[in-house]
Amino acid sequence: MYPPKHHQEFTIDHIKHVARNYPFATLVSAQEKTPFITHIPLIFHGDKLVGHIDANNPHVNLLKYDYPVMAVFQGPQTYISPSIYTTEQLPTWNYIISHASGIVKEIKNIDQIKQSIVTMTEFLETPEHAYTLLLDDPKMDRLTPYIHCFEIEVQKWEGKFKLSQDKIPQDIENAKQELIQNNQRNIAEFVNELFEKHF
Image (cartoon, rainbow, N blue to C red):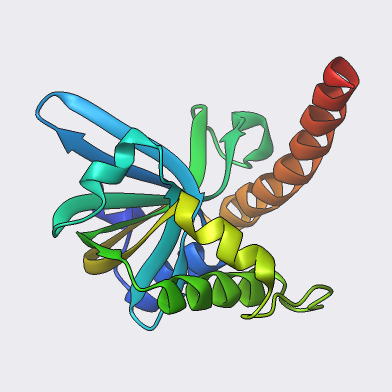
């Protein structure tokens, strides 16, 4: 990722923490000059990432055979107004991003595919576990022919956490609160407006 280094995150556990907490990834592959982009949840199975897409998705052909792929996990992000600082600053944007680059292999074994769906459901249902998907659920047998399951062997993790690290402590704290408050407020406003327009 693009420097400066004071915005780079080098602790792998911190970078993976973003992927675990924001698992809805942007999956990117390229074939010659054509990009293929799919938005899906990716879940850790050990050190690998596992996901599923519709078997008719044209991206399927690039999600097998050790093809290179990148997954982008985006955490909270927001515009930062100079008005929140105690010092003279310019407008900026703060964000938390993790990239996972690696090679991808297709998972063909039906039992492994079903287990991966169960594992993903268990993870996404945490912590309440209001719903439990059973491995022998007959709906699973009807689903598996229509999905493409794959795993990513991650070869490189990168993180960019742009959090006003180059500012004085009070301005760092102000930027942190802005990141929290803006995400909570903007999500509520956007979703409510969207639902009003569509329903």
